[in-house]
Length: 426
Ligand code: PSV
Ligand code: MN
Image (cartoon, rainbow, N blue to C red; front, side, top):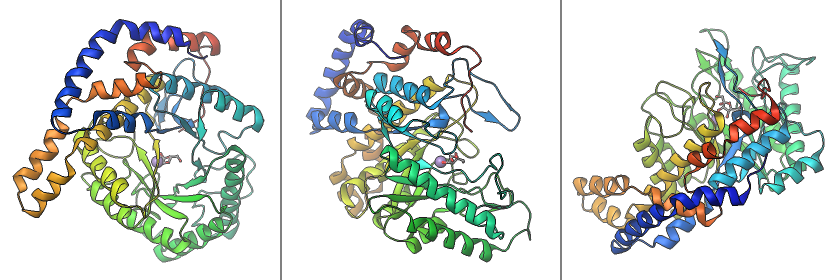
């Protein structure tokens, strides 16, 4: 289904007076403080986040999965869902595909569907954490790191296939996340598996087109619970460096042990020009299973402060590829993604409000209290009218969740796809 612009316009109309009053009040105050509001809104309007093709259906846990009615059951429908989110938020202008879950059968047709929604194809993701039907070799004991050469070769060949598929769609990057690791002490030799991983990544890197990037994602644990081969940013950074200039580290917010200082990791990587990709989610205990900004919004703001600083001061770092990477099993997935996008934009806007010049002066004067005041002044500003302005300016909804519900989008999707349609995903 597609959104009818006039319907959206009608929903917005009811909230327009209140929005205008809120925006004018905020814009006046910010202008008094020397903020260029127009520029700020434009930056928000330009900020786009890719939606992973696996997050459009209900997620699951190892204890089961509760489906969500009207899930997209093929790639075209997944792109339609991203199109819906993008129409409402104007922030989701790209999709990130997971191969082999989402291999297009008709490339031309799929590209046309995406183009009709103004959706680009962002990084393509390989999958060497599951054995596919009729696969010759198994990944049970690892993929790129496996001591069995046949498994390594198969995993390398798969990544090269993924590059090929992405190339036909216009993607420009490959994300490699490895589940490889061990469950028990002594199960594997740390040096051997790391060497195999390095060699395998170099083989993949050789097949990377000149204008492509390789993103190497890290994760401390799960599905393996004793060791993970690419467990932290240092390992990823080292592997990326050994591969070459087109290889980068990918930071996924959920892939850190509790209380890790992620903003410091981001700063170090950007200084060294090696932050390539970024996955958004939030977590209380581990991994990535809750909505962005729902648990630690202040931490997200501090991370965005590091990202904004890097984007403004580190020309050696490419513009990062942004993606939401969350998958849980309770909410309507589309509503959840809309909430995540709002939280991302909110943290970004607040980070943009930080008076960097004043902060730098306070840092140089060792005025620690002032440093905190500057950060918290930005964080405590209710910037939501700026987000609404950026959305509406691009043709989106003043309040995407309210519009989604007012337009009964889920009900219509169920009508079109049925109650039992199931999306592939994590
Ligand atoms: C597993 O943790 C994971 O969520 C990784 O973050 C990847 O990005 C994603 O799956 C898809 O492979
Ligand atoms: Mn991820």
